[in-house]
Structures are given as C-alpha cells and as structure tokens.
Length: 201
Image (tube, rainbow, N blue to C red; front, side, top):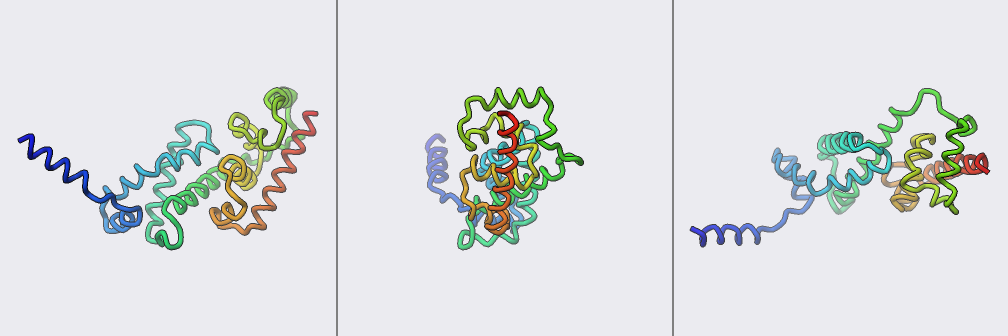
C-alpha cells in the first residue's frame, strides 16, 4: 500500500507546472481551480501594490478582491506573454483599481497644505526631521499621511516612482497614460510637496 502511495506522489511531483497563459486558457474554459491557482500565485503581488496606498489590512483585502474580480472579467482581453506577461497585466489592473478607489475616497473639498493645522505642521516637522531628500520624504511611514493630501493621480505617480521604483515609461504603460502626462503629474506633485517643506521651515 505504501509503495502505491509513493508511486502516486512521485507521479504528481513530475507533473509539469502550468504556465500563467495555460491557467488563463483553463479559466476561460470554466475551470475554477485554474483561476484559484492564479490568485494563489499573485495575491501577494496585488497586496504589496495595494499596501502602498491603503494602510489598513481590511482595505488591502478589499483591493485584492476588487482586483481579481476585474481580472476575471477582463480575462478574455489578456493577450499572453507575447504582448505582456500576466504579472504585468495584473499589476496594471491593480494600479487602476487602487486609483479608482483613491478617487472615490477623495474628500469633496480638497484640503490645502497651506491650511494645515498647527498640530499637523508640528507632526510633519517631527516626522521629517531626519529626511534629507524628497525620496526619504516619500517613505513608508509618511506616505499614507502626506500623500493622502495629493490628488489621486499625483499620489499614484509619486508612489510608483519612488516606492515601486518604476520608470516614467513603465508608469505610462501601466496606467494607460502618455509619458508626458506622467511627467506632468510628477512635477505637480513635487511642487505640492515642496510647498509643504517650505511651510515647515
């Protein structure tokens, strides 16, 4: 009996691991286990990107669910590794899902940095007292506090530039923007952050 079990384990170990493209095809054919495998493979990737924008675990979980729901619906449009790898395609869906959520959560009346309260200004001074560059300013512990004041598109651009370390061209491709738009958003966001630094001096 043990010999039979060992033979089955050995046979399973030698089964080829399906590629992402094969799992997509199987998903489109109605095989739920194939989509579950894609979720298993890339859930952490989606969570990492979502975590750049949303601090609470429940928010990240919601973004994971929203992203994979979008991915499932958009699966027929996936063109395979010849045009774009599945992780890159899914990252684009994740970023756009996060951007949409940021837009929904944006306050009806934008808070200007010039209107920061004395307590907020004091907190920013303390938090950035060791920062010596813009990149240090866009650090993990400050991102959700400072970047929340930016327009969603500006926040997305700076986060992808500094935290994800993507190029302008990669961001443009990811979000379906032109490179010029990415550069414009990055410039606008830097100007806003510069005003914050000037206010704290």
